[in-house]
Length: 506
Image 1: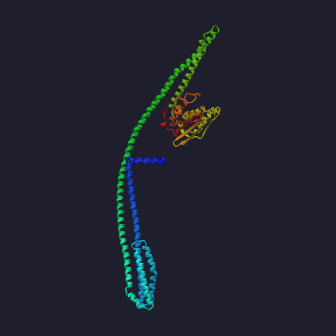
Image 2: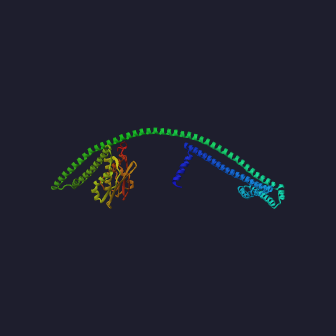
Image 3: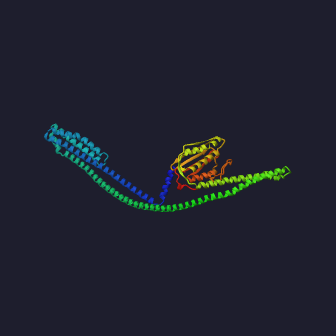
């Protein structure tokens, strides 16, 4: 059994076990359908019985008609025989001969009608026997008259032998007619009873169906009212939720603005002492050179302590170098924080962008780097996007720059930028065959000051954090699919059209 059928059966079982209004309505509909089926079956049975009854009536009528026809033809043979005996006119024999010729065929048809009927078939056989006896008696008297023995022939007639045979034939024919009539009366009563039962069943079924329809209508009305009440409750909850969302959004916006102002102020305030440190570092460096010059002049006149020489010429320059490197790094971090802060305050300006031309321009700007790395950038036809140009340029510029920076120099580099439209979204992919990223770092690389892999490239771990913030501010999302040694694919998803009310602030 497939999972789809299994899920369907489980859902049906849960529906049947749960006492709900829908289950009651479904039960009533099932009962109504069963009643309709029962009514249809009863009607079909009644129609079938009526057809059988009609066939029986037709067969009985044919048998009764055929019995009377045989009796009439037998009377015709007797009429022709008596006319010939009384008048001697041979024309009467023609009537007799025609009737005698037709009689066997009629008896055969009558036997065919009665075949298989235990009550009538023996009586039809008796009719044939009586008809043959009568035919023999008639033919015998005719032969006597033809040979001049008219008196003997009339004697046979006066003996009432033929009359007894005809009376027996009539009685047998009447018995057959009575059997058929009794059957028809019984079948008629059965048919009338069946019709009454069918009409009664249909009437009861119709009343029950009307009752079920009324109950179903009441339940459906109640169900609709409950749905409407639930919708009203949901609408009230949505209104309350929207108000809360607007309130929380306003709070978040204010908090975000405070964070941006705080970042700007902190960065600005950090820069002042940093400038002082950098200035005093320069003065220390200049003072070190003066001391070194003095030591050099002193060494020409007398011996100078080796520790002093080492401190001035090695320890002090090394310490000053560390201080200078640290302050420069701190300066870069402050600049990055200021950049993020300024980017969050910048107003977005949506416009329809030719992404193929834009990305191709970004790729062309790093041609010297790709040439040095023996790499190529392939920009496939990209779907257009309605968004902020500067943010999109910064996002793609950072990702392409990273892809070039972290190529694997053991093989020719290849970076492919592709895209597709998916209903209300546009998806872009930037794929490379570079170093790759370990699975545990797929999320960490988007955090501030976090980097992955060998730290042999310049950077402070701010680029991808800036990219994610920019993408989210545009209402989109960014993910990465990567394996170490096999390259990385950054997947960008943007709404087809930037709606400023939905754009976040970061």
